[in-house]
Image (cartoon, rainbow over all chains, first blue to last red; front, side):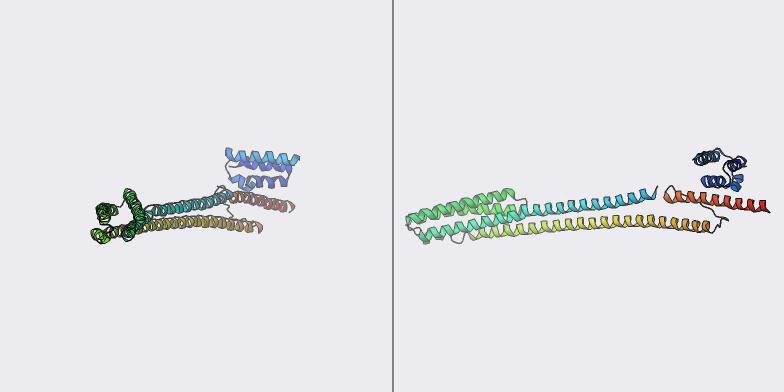
Amino acid sequence: MGAKLAGYFEQINKELGPIGRMNLALLTSISSTRALMEVDSPANIQVFEKAMVELRKTAKK
Amino acid sequence: MRISTKLMLFYVAFLAVFCALGAALVADLRSVSAGYEAVLNSSVRQMDQARIVQVNFKKQVQEWKDTLLRGHNADDLATYTKQFHERERDVLQGAEALSSQLQDPQAKQLVQQFLAARLILSQKYQQAYRVYVEGHADFVAADKIVRGQDRAPTDLFDQVVERLGVVSKQSVETQNKAASTAQNLALGLAGGLVGLLGIVGFLLVRDIVQRLAWLKSVSDRLARADLSGLAIEVSGHDEIAAFGKSMRGVRAAMEELLLLSMEETSAKS
């Protein structure tokens, strides 16, 4: 449960560090702890994908 | 629905209610005015016409008396006879015109009675005139024929005026009742609509204030980093709901920050 969602936190931590993790939680309204409890549903995955794209875009600026 | 949309709708509803009330008031005033105008144009005007006929009838009688009094002079006889016939014609025309306009059967019948009495009196005047002329201004003999006979037709016209007065009063009373009913209806409707808008406005403001108070309590807990069991349930699609969603993000970010802090502490130790 939520392994894929938790994977997004690991990925963003690698790419942008702790600030990225915080911002991912901010944009998705789900912290990494809660992500583990959430279901890897298509809707949740879509929310995380969208947030990742936005964070990467912001980081490039 | 967004709060701004709700407020705008409330404002528009308020404006619409007041515009509708204004329009209803204007229509009501027009209706009352038209009603009173109808009263003035019918029974009140007919009362005036009846009085004119009555005055002309009295003038006609006066011309007859002048004829008797001064008819010994040929010029005066011609003048007063002519004036007598003119008044007689005015009375006839006026009474017939009034009779054709009257809608009240009782008043109409009284005018018809007057016309019949006037016809008989007219014949008697002609007879008296002949006696007067043939008797070389014998006013005593002439007067005997018509003496006191103008009273009954005059009294009939008094009754016509009185009857029209009653009709006029009834029409005004009916109109007053209609105006009063319309006024009460307008007041009731206005009160009801304003009351309804007041209730809707109160509920709208209370809902906004309650939800803002809830958001403040959430914000206070986030400020104290008191996240344990903090549930941010968001309902609706308005600005407050959007703010609530934003608060969820803040809560998640703070949870992540606390987690990072714990990870950092455990890494150091």
